[in-house]
Length: 367
Image 1 (cartoon, rainbow, N blue to C red):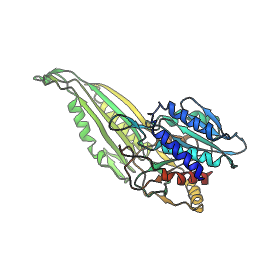
Image 2 (cartoon, one colour; image 1 turned 180 degrees about the vertical axis):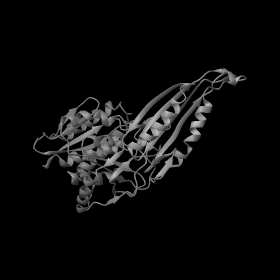
Image 3 (cartoon, rainbow, N blue to C red; image 1 turned 120 degrees about the horizontal axis):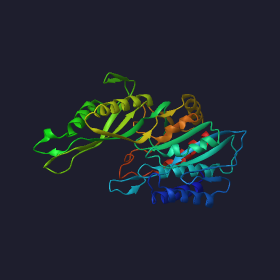
Image 4 (cartoon, helix red, strand yellow; image 1 turned 90 degrees about the vertical axis):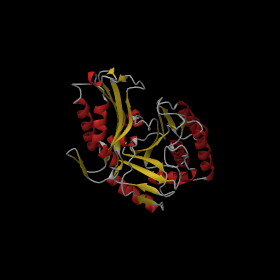
């Protein structure tokens, strides 16, 4: 990168870092992005779609179109305060850095720079669907910084890059009774406990190897994590009627996530003769899948440009809503290593500005 551009981008990343906003509330963040573009670039059209935005040079219908995507939402820390604990401030800075570097250059592609909201809750990619209904997009690229991978190395993987996942909240309503007469009521704790015990093997499936659970065969990782359980209240005279359990279901393959979902739903729907049952769904993430042909072609180009590139031996267990974009065009998702540092979402995590030039160079090479 030009030193002047790098200094601008680092300074702007620090501004974003000081103004974190949660998913679906990134109003000031988008204002800051637009102000930076207006103050530093004149060669791009800025399309403000209210809850998201994208930029491009004048569209030429005879050219193929590629999308480069960055997210810009923040998360909560353990003190219940918003902070950029996942590095989306860095992702946004990187994309703006590419725009600065590419402003005066011609490309054989239309390049759309997509600034996406709400990645953390899985809703942001779908919000940006109108972009893909407006333009025929041929390829889509995204990235994530990654602590504890070698610094300034670009990591990739064909096929499954990150897992599919979904959150469930299941509520049971039985019959309340006096604590001295529990037989006269219907306490949901035993049904919830039996379910929790039944899925305990799925909390131990941490590898991407085939296995069998409940007579269902899984070709790769599939797991369920219990994130919350609540039954009754601190009242020693009552056998409670109400209980709930919250789960994160996760699988390397979307079709196998569906198998987990069917197991959970059928278990609780089977209780409807006794309990009132409510099942709510949250934060659905599609499998983040990289097109093998695009991966092969892109990796060869990156290596030819002298960038250090390494293939991941297995997918990342976490989810990323970038996986939604495979509905529209071949996709490829990268990780840029940040070296030894606190993990994503840790209270002490801070994006490392030293990886910005590597990430910008990667996207420039792709363009």
